[in-house]
Structure formats: structure tokens, C-alpha cells
Image: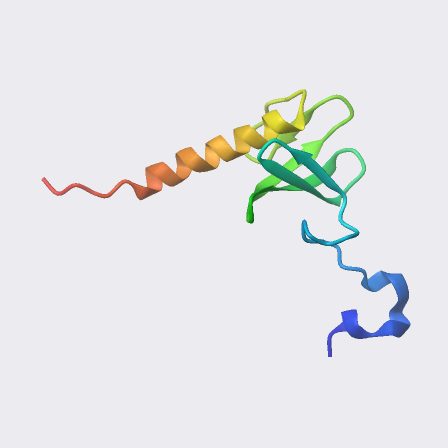
Length: 102
């Protein structure tokens, strides 16, 4: 039996990782990306989606944003999300290059 189905447990069983389509999800919509709040206070942690694909995590500090792949500080969440997306695109291109036999 799933503990999420037990109505006597109260609020402790609320889903922690809400999907971007969940009505209670805290979202930040920015050009081409959706940020969904996960947890934390400072930094607040958001999952980054590009369409239906989750790219990774970004972190909202008091005065800047960062992502999970570098230690750069960005003034806007869009910049942190784009840097994460660019990193994943570059990583997928290096992995997709076929070995050329000589």
C-alpha cells in the first residue's frame, strides 16, 4: 500500500516533487523554460524543464542564480537555465559523435 494513499497521515504525505502541470506547483515561466520549485529557502531549488524534458536544477540565491553544472552566478533565471541547456546540448553532441574507423 502506498503511504500517499493513507488519508489519516495528513499533510506529511503531500508530494514533494510536483509536476509542472500540477495545480499546486510553484512555477516560474520564462522564455522556452519552466522552473518548478523543489525545496529549500536560500537557495531555493527549481527543476528546469524545456517542453516536457527535465534538464536539471537551478538554484535561486538572494541576489543571483546558478545551475548544477557550473559555479557561475547569473542575474536572471533564464541565463542559468540557458547555460544548463547549452551544457547538456554540448555534452550530448560529444556523446553522439560516432567513432570513425581509420
